[in-house]
Image 1 (cartoon, rainbow, N blue to C red):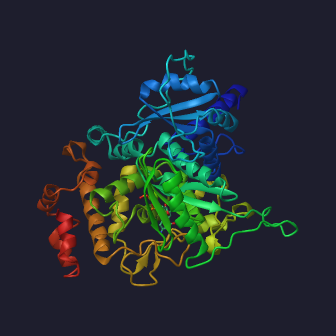
Image 2: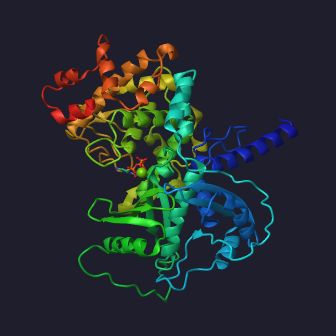
Image 3: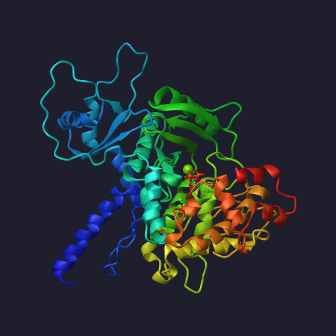
Length: 563
Ligand code: CTP
Ligand code: MG
């Protein structure tokens, strides 16, 4: 390789790495590096991405401003104290304007924070250490600030794509594969969306730092697993792990600790207190709800400045490792995330998923269904390895033990995974989506469970209608809430989708060709149209639903399908 070419590649790699971090939580279209030579890294690790995001948040503030036009003044004011790296603008649902400013270093940020006037004296508030601030209008004459040396990195940065525009673009695509890719590109969580999620985590971390030692608040779930869309909720986990240093047996001086007595377990009391603290100390947090009797107790709240719905839980590191696992699977092949987006969007459109919890399937088990499908060894070859394979290849550095001694050890460095373990077929997205629906049209939900650990279906240990093995806790079923009727609907809808997609591949078919027919909300008219074209063996009508299942489906579930 010539020196020039090598330097070009190295520069390319650096830029790509920057792009990777600057793009969606590393969910940019190209999530891995090209392998230029045997010694170079092809994949970035999840831990590297998380460390980068956390450090970015520690160097950033979010400032409420009058309008986008405040940029110049705010930039000038802040750059008196520190070097600015980037400024992003966004509006929340209340049409309030904000600027996220990233500084060059954590120290610079401290300089800026020291320059803040804290609070109005006449208000009944106590000082709080928070990265969420507001920019007061200048009193009297305005200073002449230097002209910003950069432009705004984003304007209206968390505005969601206009659905009409998106559908128009989908109509204009050339192939179904293009439609699937476009849906992903236009709706996935963007860089600012990820930054703001880490800012909310940082805000709570700052609030708790003086109360708990070694405290960390981390996003998990769709905010970081590579499958998040714009506007997705924010799952947060609070940990305050004891380090080896903190538990040294040789130390003579030992910290006195408060005794937590009375009814609830100590952590439940802490969660309760956390709810109070959010109400009292976290600017922007509202509608705080404590759900402490669930298997994983959570405190829910809305974050007004960022328009985020947040679920905060305690010590649920398995949730973080699960997110890491999903992220790794998504990073192994460029098709995994777009395909999952298409499936999740279709499931939402046909009403299989629902934003409210209930007896239906949710996005997380649906994602496991896509991963499981991609593990199948077809004639074309498989796309993803089994989890068993990743566990077998794990080294000492991969050992992770989560709460309740849960072993979450699996290979983390995908550079160590032999190429024959993944991306073995080159089938396009259109074919993969059709094969996904066909695969589940024929899946034996009655007797078999879906297991990404094995990559092949396994015998169900009980008679629950839908059984998807929890990859990190194999004795659990992540879809145990799914009712018989909802599972029947899932079976019927995958068959419908397979038929509909196959019949609608041709662009000439009109405005609901290809993916459009699957992701547009089904109206009564849409369903009637489906029922009219009744000569395909795959077509499942409402009547078929009754026939298939005798009278086991309650009438209301069929009704809700037609509505
Ligand atoms: N999770 C889990 N076991 C479950 C349910 C959830 O480990 N039975 C973890 C997964 O890591 C999941 C995260 O909790 O990603 C958050 O769950 P949820 O918010 O339901 O799913 P998301 O993946 O965040 O998807 P969505 O965009 O619908 O919020
Ligand atoms: Mg979530």
